[in-house]
Length: 610
Ligand code: NAP
Image 1 (spheres, rainbow, N blue to C red):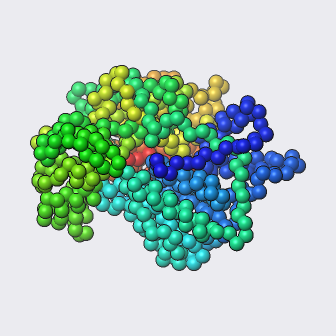
Image 2 (image 1 turned 90 degrees about the vertical axis):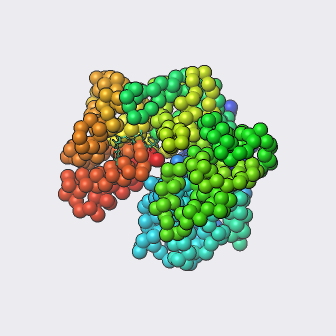
Image 3 (image 1 turned 30 degrees about the vertical axis):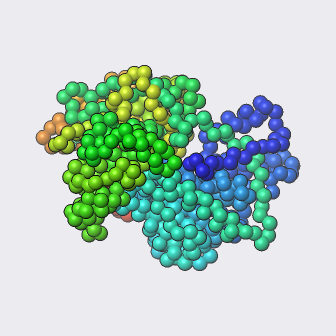
């Protein structure tokens, strides 16, 4: 976010030697804001116990009374909402406002009735689902037990993807419900699309101004002096990606497979980038050149013509290749194109009662299809303005740094299909497929604190990852092998459920899993090859067959993980887990639901689904 850079506090008179400061930086490195405040309180506690007085810290903001405090709560699946919320918190902190920032599942719902100033930054997944970490809070706010909120001033920033019809539905619901409960909006709700800066930047500026006004103190504000130097921003991130060299790019499905899945290895040497199993790698893709040329031909526009937009002057070909979304349609683009093409058919699809038709169109068509099927006379300037900015794609990391050092590995399914009039591709997977060894790709790490191995290595883990959903579990098993205590008995067991179409062609990382079974780093392995027999067999069939043991593992404290397709698989697996818990735990469906929600609350059921 260029115009709204974080102002990193420093410690002007830190009573520490260089060594101590370096040690502190190591401790705080990678902690989120909540963790930093916790550490701050911990240090304050230590100082009080040792009889010292805290002259420079009058009150950590987290302790401020609700009346004079800003609370920022985020619900985030891929880290965007978290990043925006933390950015707002840093600016509020720098402006001297007492502020706390909490992940939605860490927000104590009993405090809502006393909350005075609340900002919610929440994403919507796919077709209107909340992010996993916000499920319970949203249920509470939507439910009968939600308190009256006459004292509350609030604002909601929704994040979403306008290639889904239910764009920002969760933000809409929360905003409306808080008003219904008596809250007063400090700002109108804002809906940010994948190019979230466009909406989030101005929203942050306004939100900060409103918070300053709202918290204008009768009594002086508690001054918060950071106890610690915040870790310096890493040299590389989303806005300053690292050019990582491709070390390997191998197809790991056999020739006869319906899928072209790649194992990609990149070098992070010299980047300073660190990741944990569960994190994702972001790639800023370049659109397939053949697709750009097809769009130029279809629209009759000159790729060499210069277009000025948003302060940048670039040839149209470069706009389309590097700056604009071509492989995913968004509702706003469909609307602009319908107007431009004067197409009754397209306008009809946008009608409120045609949601299934719009969903189908957004899922199945690309920009090129629209241009071909509904010709329109776009000028280059208009087309660039109407298309959505290109955004990075995230891939679950398939390696542990304890095992691969300065490398990062990915499992990438190349999206390529024949649309009848030529091939279509996925932007990032095609970029990977085109990138041979030696090519450099612009990447960054997106941390995902919600998808972590248990801190307690003696806990069992159950991993469910069909298709490329197996990627993070390769990282998990590598990590558990690398950190396994030497003595036997103390380390938890690892159980993997994997599925794909055919044993012969689609058994991803077969040799590695066999080795892990032999080494004793993988204890249970259940396979579901869907097309090796007349009827489909899916991972949930194996879960059902192993229901008794699965439930016993959960009762024994196991952590459960699910990764892969969000639209069908994750929903079906979730239903099966409920059925297994109900059957083997002797529970009603409602109680099974509570059981699974509880696991989620305890951080023992985590999902990374797309
Ligand atoms: P996939 O299409 O999910 O297929 C994997 C296996 O799951 C196949 O055997 C498939 O069987 C089966 N399957 C189909 N429907 C299912 C259902 N309702 N329940 C359970 N299993 C089902 O695999 P993929 O090509 O590797 O794609 C994975 C999907 O997840 C993609 O949509 C991808 O975008 C997403 N994903 C994202 C990430 C990430 O980066 N975090 C990681 C992994 C996957 P049939 O095809 O024979 O029916």
